Image 1 (cartoon, one colour):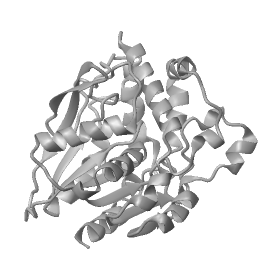
Image 2 (image 1 turned 30 degrees about the vertical axis):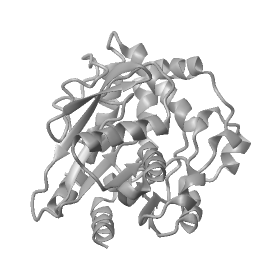
Image 3 (image 1 turned 180 degrees about the vertical axis):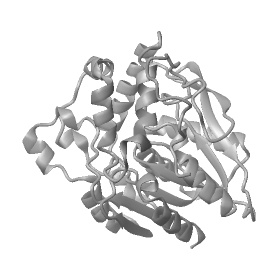
Length: 320
C-alpha cells in the first residue's frame, strides 16, 4: 500500500489528542528525549529493519508539514525490501512529537535528527525529504556533508525565497488562520496537493487534522503550526544547493502548485513566483551531482500519486 493508512473511521466528531495518540502508523512508535530551546521534548520515530538482503545502509524519511507518518507506508515497504534500514521521525512541532512554543529553525531540527541517528548508533545515512522535509534534508546535508551518502528531495519547499513574494505575517495571524479552518476549507487545502488522487485517498489527512481541533490543547497545535510556517518563510535553502557534494535525486510534479502562505500574496506576486517544478528544473543545475525527475500531471506528493514509477526511480537512484 502506498499510503496513507486508513483509520478505522473517518468520523471527525471524536477528539484526537494533538500528539495524534492512537492514530494508525505503519509500525511501532518510539520516543527520543531531547532538550530544545531549554524545554524537555520527545521526538517520535519508527525504526524498521530490512525485510530482505540487508545492505548495511540506513535511510531517514523526513515528512512534509501537513502530512503524518502514515503517508510513508509505501516508501517504507519499498526500501525495506531493497535491504535498507528505514527510520521515520516526526520532527519536533509535528505529528506525534512534542509541540513546544519556541522559535523553530531548520538547524535545530537537523540537530535533533542527528541526535536520533547518534542514539541509533548510525554513522553515514541517506536522507529522503518531502516538501518541508526536503528543505530540512538540504539544511542537514549542508551541515554534515560527510555523514550523508545520498539525498532524495521530493517536491522540496525552499527553492524560492518566499519573502520576495509574500508579505510577512504576525504569528498570531497564522494561529488564527489555523483555528479558522472548517472541514470543507481544510479538505480543499489538502486536495490541491493531489490532482491525481480521488478524495477518499487523502481524506485521512483531513480526518486527523479536524479531530485535533476538538482537543483541549489545540491552541498549542495551532501555535506550533504557525511557528513552523515562520521557519519555512524566513529560511530559504536554495542558496545551499551549490554546496551539496553528495548524489541528489530531485523530483517534482508538473502540477505542484504548493507554496507556503501563498494566500497572503497579491495576485501579481502569485503569478510571478516560480512554482516548485520550474524552480527544481533550475536548481538541479546548481547541484554538483544531481538528477532531476519530472512527474507529469502529478502534484505535490508523487510517491502517493504515481507510486509505481516513483518506486522504480527511487530504487534505481539508491542503487546507483
